Length: 380
Image 1 (cartoon, rainbow, N blue to C red):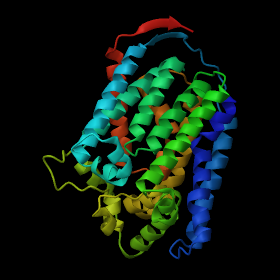
Image 2 (image 1 turned 90 degrees about the vertical axis):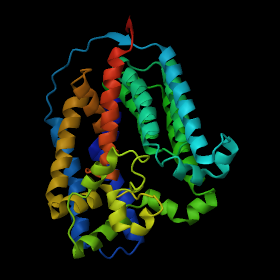
Image 3 (image 1 turned 60 degrees about the vertical axis):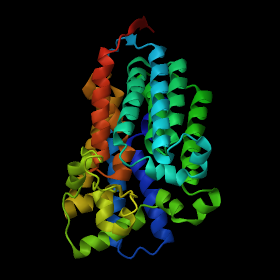
Image 4 (image 1 turned 180 degrees about the horizontal axis):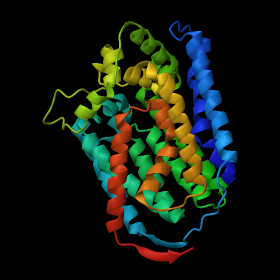
């Protein structure tokens, strides 16, 4: 089972599956004229290359066994309760900032409004929330699965999912099981895994439907297309780059990243990519997901045809080296394991993505604060 999980969540397999469902199927079903046959061949080459390089590196790997220290120090469950209470207070603050009152019925009835307003000028709130989530994730990462703590983490994730967050919440839940099975080499609890899997699906579906008001609106609107089609964005980006050149536009997002909206009220609500390709959409503060191909084209132009394969083989190499045989508990290892597991964000959001930097900062802060929290020693 450990090997199965290792392969399923590998960057290579995720990349291959993502291309099928989010590029090839939409391309077949739609007339995307700017995605030429040459570009499709490049995508197919990347899929074959990432799979074959992963298989080659896997069989050429160093099979040296690593000694694991089974002496653990863990924070108490009291901290998990405190984190949950703080997250609950912060989410209620978001509700109040959106509606000038705390009314959960209004949140459900006007969810799209809440989703939009809760993201304006509140980056610091989500940074704190993510910080507490990462503290719990780090504790479970270092010490293995504790069912009491897992339930408290799930409670925190359910709370945060009320704000419309989907991908990161699902990743955090699945990361716990990945860590438990692949890193700590424990047997899987199928009942608990099925529960977390169904919860992840429920979070995605419920948030998607609430954003669109109801199920019929979701299926009949562009929301469904935006969730499962990256090809139309790629088509528009290729059309744009055929006429104009664009390089390192993510630097605009870096420039605005740490500017408080209270001090800089004109700070853009959308990403540089969305503002460049979809200015009408950007006016509403909405972002589109650009994917690794479109993101690379907008930031490094045709160097993307070289950079993407290089990036993929580096991801494969690091994944095999650090996931299977290195079991250190230092900051470098924690960051590597999390980002390698979170490779779907590179695939879906692109390599040049300030969100990855923000998450990295939260992870580093969580790591060093975690070192300061009193812990209890125990042995498994």
